Each structure stands twice: as C-alpha cells, then as structure tokens.
Length: 486
Image (cartoon, rainbow, N blue to C red; front, side):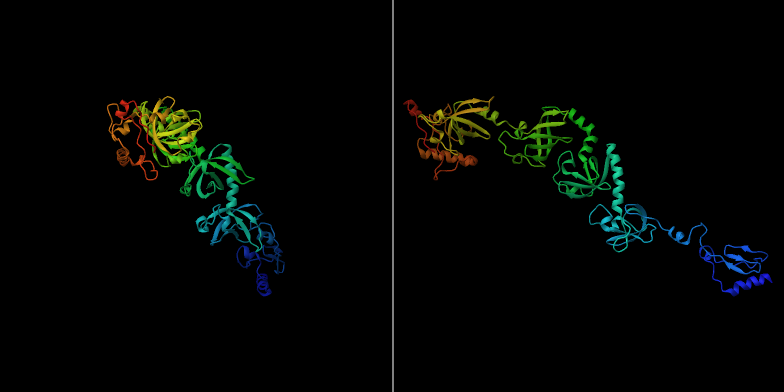
C-alpha cells in the first residue's frame, strides 16, 4: 500500500534527520502522509509513489542563512563604542564582562575606576550590569579589552558641561590629596585647589579624604582633561544671606571674641563665628612685630576690636592691640617731665641715640643732651646695649615722642615712681640715701633681686651704676654730684 511504502521508504532509506529538528522539535514524519500527489513539506517532498526527497536547508524560519543566524546572536562592536554587559567574573587584576560578543570582554583593574590601586571587588559585583567603552576589539592575546572608567568619563563630560553652562554645582567624594589641593570624584578627576576648599585657606587637607563635598566648576577643558572646582565659591553662594546678616550686625568699635584661623606674613585671620576678619600686622601689638607668628598662633583665642566693615568687598578689619593697654598711655600716666628713668641704648643715629625706657617705649637723646661738653658723634658717649639713667625732658603723647637727656640725669632729680620703693627719697622724690659706692651698690642689688628681669649684664662683675642724684648737702653748697660710670 502507498502508506506502507511511504513508511518503508523512510525507515529503509537511512535518511538523516532534517536540520530543522535542531531548531524546532524532533517530531517524526507523519504516518498519515498521502501519496495522491507530490506534496511539499517543511522537511522535503513526496512524489506520487510516496518516495521522500529531503529539501536542502538554506535558511531558517526568519529567511536568513545559517551563518547569518549564528552571527545574529552576537553584538557588533567597534573601538570607542559604549556597550552594556553583565559582570561574570572578578579577579584581583581584571573583570570579565559578557556583552553578547563572541568572547567575553576584559576590563583591567586600572580601567575600572578613576581611583588608583583599587580592589575590583570594591567597584563591581557578580551579576551587576555596567557600561563600558571598547578600547580594542582584539589585543595581542585576541581579547576584547574594555574600560569602565572611560565610559564613565564620557558620560560625565556631557553632564558636567551642562552643569557648567547652568552655573550649577557638582558633588562627589574626595579621593586623594595631591600637590596643591584635592582630587574629587565627579565621574572624572576634578581638581579642588587648597585655597578654594574653604572660605579661608586650609593647611591640613588629609581630613577631607573620604568626605563628600559640593563645589562650583570654575574651569573646564576637555582637550586638556582639566576640571577645576571651587568649594569656596559654593560656600560663598550658599552663605551669602547669612554673611550679609552677619556684616549688618557687626559695628566698628565692637569688642568680639574669636579664634585665630590662619597666620600669614601680613597679619592674622580670626574666625568671628560667622566670617573671618583680618588683623593687619600693624594692629597686632603696640610693639614692632617682625612676623605675626611671634604674637599669635593658629587656634589661639583672642579678643579683638572691629575697626572697619567693608560691605562691598565683605571684608572685616580687626585690631588686637586696641584691646590691650597702650604702653604710651600707661607710660604717660605714670611718668612726668623731669623724672629719672633707667633705660637701654637701642640704636645710634648721627643726631643722637634711642633709649628704651619701657616695654615698647623708646625715647630720643639728642646729641646735644648727651654730655656737658661738645660731642661730635654719639659713639663718643654711649654704645648700643649700654644701660644708663636718663631724664625725661619732654613727653608728647599725641605724637608718641619722648625726649631724654643724659647730661641732665647727671644733675640729679626726682626718681620715677617704679623706683621709689627701693630707695630712700625726700619729700620731692629725690634719692637721699647712698653716700658712697658700697651703699649704692647694695641698694641696687636689692632692687634687681626684686626685679630680676630688669637686671643689666654686669660689666667685669660690677653692679650697674646708681643714678646721679643731688646730695642734700651738696645742693646747699651749690655743687653737683657727677654720676659714676656704669
């Protein structure tokens, strides 16, 4: 019978299974196929006798070649292309990424992150879907090499350019301290200069590592791969309202407490609790200051007076010495013209010499007041560092000037108040004790024992000279006692 012939033809011919079974199912040929005519089949054809002729397989159900069908299962990649894939393996020095290519892509550890020396396990996890950029389709070892950080870099540039145009802010963790500033991860390496980290310059940048900061973009150059950030600009913008309020409530003449935030060559900055103010070096002390660091240090708590508030430039001028006793006021309040004071020669000039008679107080001994005889140059009478008695002959507080005299001190006179408790004086303040050198030396020894900081260096083991004062009997005889040399 036809049916039997058909069945017999299939079973006895040794025909191989159609390749179509590989794509659909392994179903057998139908036993009910008729032989009434030549019939088409997806597997082949039957003639009138029921003989089966397999059809040559040249395409699948989609109408493409077998080779095309295989190629269609893989993605096409080119150098510089962005691709997506799944992390399938993580090693200490590389990560394997399945992107649907004929082979898995390799991401070297250095191409995982903009951070240096990272552990791949800290960047990606198995099964994670990530984006990468194709570095090369085939390296020397035939591998597809990818980069996660460069894909991130390309995406970040587009975002950052838009933020820069909109004058917005970026945010990211500080990942590294470099020379001159910090590196911030904003999808790429953003440089934050040390001078722009805070409203004032920061000396120690290490504590910022790991912290997330916000900043403004102040410079952007893709060709040079250069992104410069400013956190100070962000702080100034966000704190403008509070700064305006702070400046409005700050009045010149006010006394404020603060903490020294930084010391520079021209002065010191003080944090007043809302903004920083500057104490210029000239306002640090009533004395001459060679460097502000000799007066204050970072972290010192200080009391200052507000000198000026500049609203336009948002600057505050402060004074430390204004909160301290003016040594000139103090000296003028406790000394009078005609009194004898003890001092040290600090400097000689052609027209005389300067003598320090108090802390930060210097007076001039004009060359005409150095001796009773003619003097061609100050060096003939005194030398720098020498200590001696002088008389105040003029005191000008307004101009901060004191005129002194060595020759008039030799004539005697009233001792200044600070010396009187150590010597016997008459009702006019003149020294009445000490008729010989031994008594005078004993009196001075007692004075220096109670005031060790004022003791001058002894010359050849001798004590400092006593002041020349008028002896009562000598005055009666109208004679002047000369001061012994130191």
